[in-house]
Image 1 (cartoon, rainbow, N blue to C red):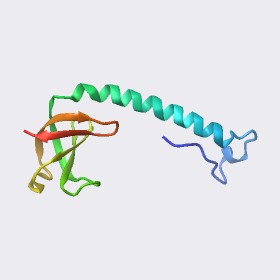
Image 2: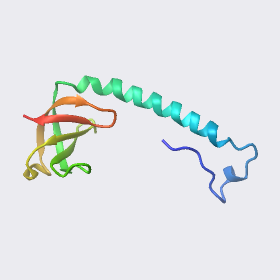
Image 3: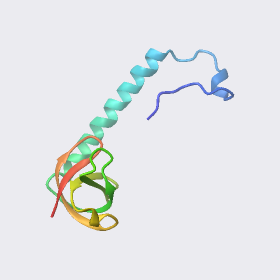
Image 4: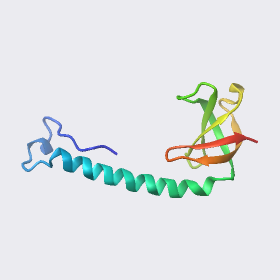
Length: 106
């Protein structure tokens, strides 16, 4: 999701009646809240399930954690040995967050 911004040289840049910045931000905030509520609702179904996760590497936010993706492309963060990188791992989902899931290696 992105807030609309004018791009010099595009047809939209030449249009009259541009939307004021405050309205753009209000619209973006409404869209973001809607999307986040839908994501939150859809990730609840993963809680307490075991997912096959392709381990991609270490977490961007914590070098002690690994990150990977489920077959439905959900990001999962969990503790594990770096030897798992590039392999599939069974992860029990223990927490749901808006943009990722947390789990434990089983």
